[in-house]
Length: 596
Image (cartoon, rainbow, N blue to C red):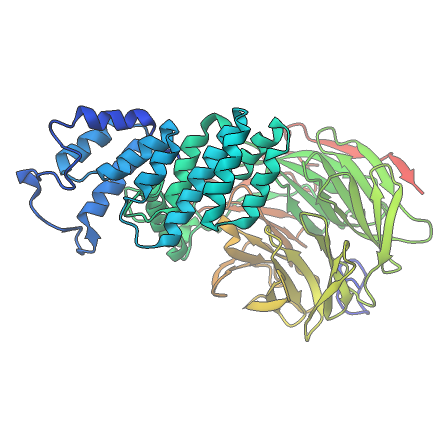
């Protein structure tokens, strides 16, 4: 076992809408004899009573409720059902004036539409002007598209400009007059309107401007339901469900949704396992060991892990691994040695990266998948292309025993150790840097999926969560695990990364609620220090842990029907406990080309 203090071996030392079409309006005329559109309220049916409010708590207005249901029916394409609901309820979706206005817009009767707009009972003059601007803008663009330049100019000068609305857009429309026809089409796209269905899109824009009492917003019922489901999900303390939320019942996850039962024990490594990480797709797991090897495991359709390749060739222990953005390649980094790049499918070593006189201590991919990043023993960083050509380098940490780093998804932000208690956030484009300063020594850190949060492990048996979106701010703290000598790694995980997991020197895995900081689960099973944990990004019910007991444990849900499976052993060279050979399991010696 490696240690953190200087008197320990170096192996584990903490290194320095749709809108109803015009045809729908015709449906209203078909019903005219039964439900005159000239009446704002038709006669309610006897069975409906005269209740103004509906619902058990009496907070839902009946007419609004019916109208958004009607709107949803039309949006879903159930035109007849929508019309029948209007007739049966006596509550029309739109007033006769609004129906006329919509028809005029869809028919392109722009002048009449503006006149009708002014007949709608709108108290805010600014709303009338904004809606008129959208209508006249559409008129202007269609005139240009039809090569009616003179009428377009008149519309712009005498109708649009006097409104005094959106002067910047008026200038853009002016430029369309002297531009090619292609720029007229561009004019539609700037408005968010494509010429093929621009009038329907115009109605959607008008719905955003006009009050909802005049025109019910698109997808209002869907939005309300989504809001309700979101509130339920956010209120669910243990939310970690794979399945979507149901409308039939209120949502609730129990603690049983956390991966807390050992489903597999993987024995293929012959020494302490120091690092592991699921691939971006969650279809693979890679592990790195003091036995100088790395292993690629495949997650099959049943969630079982099978040994795919054993990667050998490093002369020193393998400290870390890194998946390419497309999961087709894997980097392995030996301890102060070299970086090797592997083909995940074949297990072939594609390249060896090294610098004479210097050791490489960390590795990672840039988001483009065409460059890799390495940390050097001289405390600098080096950026390589895949062929081994050095394309950039810069000064890294000042003095630290910890070697850790992360790269943002856009490749602009490099996060690395600066000093023992400081993390540097370096912007490669602006060359500016921000610092995270802790009071105690940092042993490791990891970046959240959205790139806005950093999880920092400390020597004080604490893990801090930092918001790094702008000026770094510490937002939470997690404690309870044990750490006195070794590098212990933690991770984000679960549905929407709502949980924090960490290894521990007491041979257990600890899981906290990310938002509250509460310790909610402790998982025994290993017989040695748990060095690293990784949560499957595609399956919130799968967690992996790496330990000094030479094993990897795969954790899942507590289901009585599941039986634990042990895969491989130090004596069986990766053979199943029942004697069968792991699928496509093979050993690969690296003989790739070296980059000097």
